[in-house]
Length: 200
Image: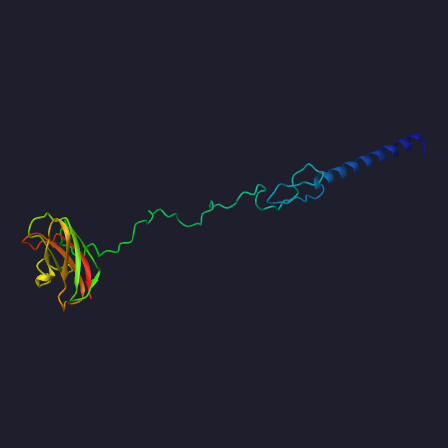
């Protein structure tokens, strides 16, 4: 083979080898060794030799930083409770409008028992009278008028001062139900204060 042919063949082989080397390099750069690092929940550990981007193209999981991808901020999705908290004690007293025509009380009465049988005695403490002679304590049906009170004389008694106590007798045969102790001024049926109890 003459000199010019050998030289041409050598050039051809050199070019072919160069193209093959470049092709392999490009193929390795594009694909690299498989990225075996976890896609989610932690940093990627790239075990390949390439310097390109992560070869995973369908990664739709959470970001590698582990951040919560939710949009509700951790709430339950319901509307917030904007009402004030209910911290008050339960209302166990009688309805506010049980006796709508009554004036605000000025005398405080405290029964010594919540129930009593007809024909028995029941005590009551009082405070807030003016100390005027003739002020008295009696028993009447709940919300009844001031002049509707139990007789005889043992079912009511005079106050002995601005505060004190009295023992009253419930007449035998009194109908069962809700009754009230009542505080009265001297020579009057105006009710100054009440406290309820049951006659059985």
